Length: 317
Image 1 (cartoon, one colour):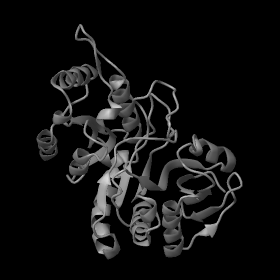
Image 2 (tube, one colour):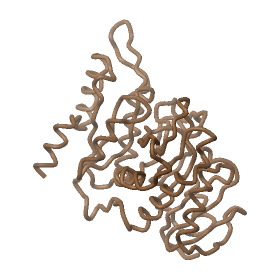
Image 3 (cartoon, one colour):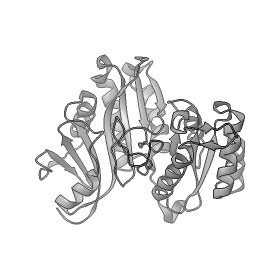
Image 4 (cartoon, one colour):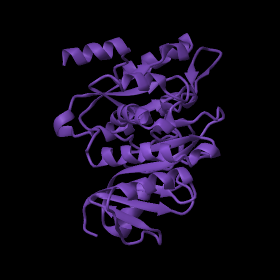
């Protein structure tokens, strides 16, 4: 293997939702067998490397560095095909960035990741969201599936842009072949530039990149913003990733500042040259929390924009 930049597709051998997506990828393109990585199977297609890992993905920390150390190739991005678990049990297809920036610094999360940090979000989130909305209706067997972003959550800890692409939400659905077909084709088309778009600072410098704040796990604000032409999506922080504590004297503490700073830093790393802004779900916060966020972002020099203001910015560009 030569010293070149590659995109990893990390497959969980024990997850049928993950392996089904991988099987679709193997069927629709002519991959070659690569050298094994840490003893595990690898398939090669142009700049893509698909590796089958033995037991889960959430704790595969520093996979990018481990790959480079063993192969000499530089990993520029990781895609994690996976299953999605939800108490609702609703069939679903989802995309999301990863990280647990709200946990105490350095603490390992129960589902991977390390507190106080988040990996860079994939720059493909917005374009793949639009692709998902276009691809799913063409597969009749996934009619009725919920399509959604999920907010930033869980591990592993890596240093390169990444995303999880998932089939949910119960064991009955994880092996759904139609769902795997939709996501497998989306991954292929997105990574081989048949469709979709990836950040290029020489082309996209100055473009708006939005970090969303507040709301529930399924990020409707980000889902709507990603439909606006010219908007790129970074990290998405739910209310639970913004822990506030208000003291008797009115002082506001908690890990919410740490969480926002980590999300902003990781998003800037993923989108060099981009104008990173925040957009807040006002109804998700109490008045004192909203004001604390406004004051903090103003002090940090980060614009806090409404959807209307984002559209106005784009019209003026």
